[in-house]
Length: 54
Image (cartoon, rainbow, N blue to C red; front, top):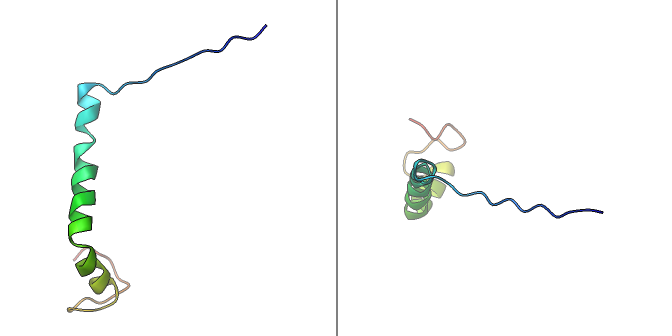
């Protein structure tokens, strides 16, 4: 005889608070997509292929 076990996971309020920083980063990246792609390709003073920091 086998039994099906059901487990439900729910984030606590503290855990839900951790969702906002990645969501903010995603919104920023979406808003600056064209600039990021241009910098990656070396436009507007970007060096292209290098670190996105600095």
